[in-house]
Image 1 (cartoon, rainbow, N blue to C red):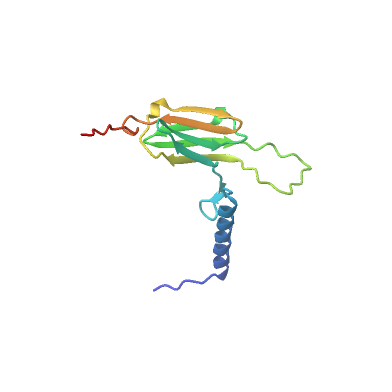
Image 2 (image 1 turned 135 degrees about the vertical axis):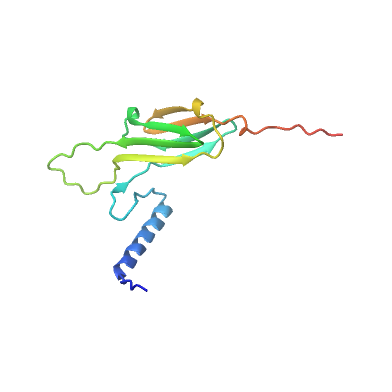
Length: 150
């Protein structure tokens, strides 16, 4: 049996993380997320995914991202969006009071709710919003069945 050393400050850090998550959920903000305690901060764009009778639509907020540097892959009913938001060069004499803009590379993979035709996917980028439209496969589209009344 090994003896574990108790760290009271770790419990405080965990409480701080829990409160941060709670406030982020209440205010609707997407928090920066850390993969491991010592790894750099990773950001992900806010997205929305919805479906119509004919297609699945994925929208992602990508402000400040050059559309030429955006990679979108549709494969096995998942969508992967990869890009990089480049940080402007920092100028001497700036004294930042607050920095909330997010920079750096990201990769985000989303599962699609139904089977799609990946080869027919279309993506557009306008005003910092990426929109991907992927038609549903014939098997995934709703089918109407006529009821025979006798």
